[in-house]
Length: 462
Image 1 (cartoon, one colour):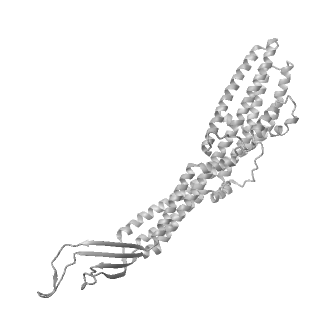
Image 2: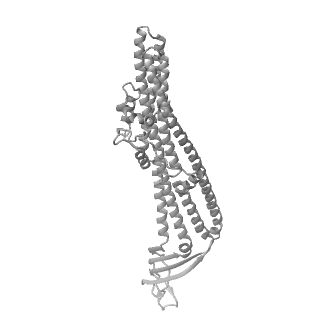
């Protein structure tokens, strides 16, 4: 039943020609009042449009917000690497109390003794420049971090577009359900009018009471269908509110006029559309950025195998200063500078497993890219097929709706002249309702199929 509700929204477009000229419709036209009621629901000033819904859902999406936070976290890595590019500096200050030891004598008394210093003061500045890391490791590591940020940003944009596409399709389903409710309400009105007409004929014994009872049963079914459609419309409205972050008291009205034809551009072949989508869609761009980041990360990881060359310098202001033996009770300034080369077998051995992990992750990204291409190909094929079916359904629904409306009008006239039975009118009413639903279905399905195809092919990428 939910599908029937959603399907109903396409009715408006099928009835566009009738709604366009309501004033010229004859008084007994079964579509005139109905078309006017449908027209009053569509294109409301300030109402929700598919574009508005997509934009609000993209802004309100938790998935997009999560990706945005991941991008912010990735940016901190770049800041850390920039700090690592600076020389390693360290300032130090200390006071040390030493244990008492005998005075130092270089000759027997009365030669003077050097009194032991029990208090030691130190002020120092150390500088280290890791040449190997600065020249060979940190630059590719910085590029890898930048690629990771780009991948996270593309992921944010992809999540926002996904949320927008889902909200847009839900919007059309809500429109479908809203218009289906109008169809069902109209059907209840039609059945009630026919029941009243038939009841008069039964009173004068010119119609069968069995026909009246059958019509009563049809009215009950129509009322149940109306309740189901109203509930479905309410549920879809609540879901739409959640996706776009609408307040509970925000009125939801339909801002789009779905009777207007959607212009679909000339489409390329599926293979060409898939290839173009892989160059446009943010998911593909995120995978490409992540792959580039792994390549840079592989470069900086290979540096682990090499010896590390560091420049260092020290500046010390101390009492006592070990460089000044003759005056231990005074502060003296001293410095040292040099080059240090180190090589760790552990770092060398760790490099291979780290490189193997990076290669495995790169293969995984390549498979993710292949899977994305397959998914896009499937989405494009499915959406194109749905679009073709919707266009065919729209063309046939136009003819079916016109025929059903005329059939219903003729059956009404025949019943009034007692040349048709109520059962025949009931059948005509059902056929008219089904034709209206089919017309609604065709237009809504066409819009949904085009939304799916546009998103799959990356045509919604700004």
